[in-house]
Image 1: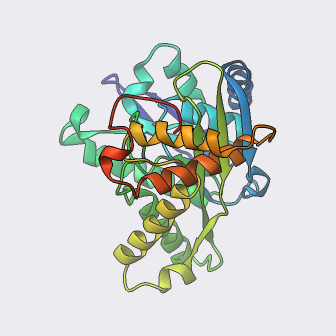
Image 2: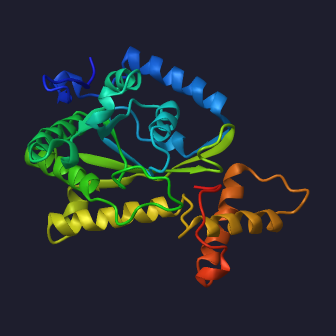
Image 3: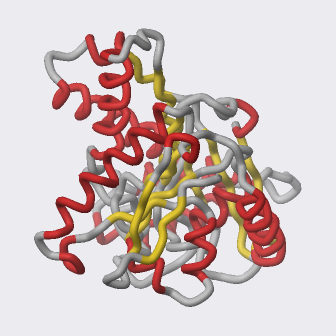
Length: 306
């Protein structure tokens, strides 16, 4: 069994979760979807480097996978194909209505999120049920995927500030489990940076960086005066970890200048890995961000990096 969104009577996605559904076993359909995504990724990306995934929390450990979200549906595709566990992503419920894609999303164990722009005043009540569902999945040892930016936009930087939903979910799962007598319960919050050389282009390159888990337990929560402060601190830590493994520039002009500088910096006979090249590019972008705005090439349209 798996956690799945199904079609509600009003045509929107619905979510239900039985206790036996909330665990961490990978379903056959999810395995098939992963194989399809791996084949798709092999064709689309010329190079894919994946770092740190060997330290991903083991099956049965409550985990929140958090990623930068600048490439639409390609982001969960990349994460599903690389992450060794079944990841249940939270996504806007309108995706359930998309032909073919809706079927894949339904059978990947995804959880629908209801936005006010589509559902008005009903969105809040529906999302309370979603909140209860994801807490149940975590307490059963499942793995959930979230984009703290909230939405996907084709930008040269991550949208800031991050939403605190991920932190509040982790802290609430710890609170409920502690009150139920599971004093050693913990949630692993794992930041994953997705960096593309040309995210929108065929045969571009992808570097995935799985960061060290941020462990959230009763001791972590007790360090702060209240849950609001704890959620704020956890969100700031998550933001800093993702900033360290992604490339963030104020505009595309800085990205283009950074690419030129990195290529000039690299010795003609050197063979850098993708991670090494992106680290060099990130360093130059950080230097260029200190320069006057008009010295970085303007804020023109899209370009490489991300």
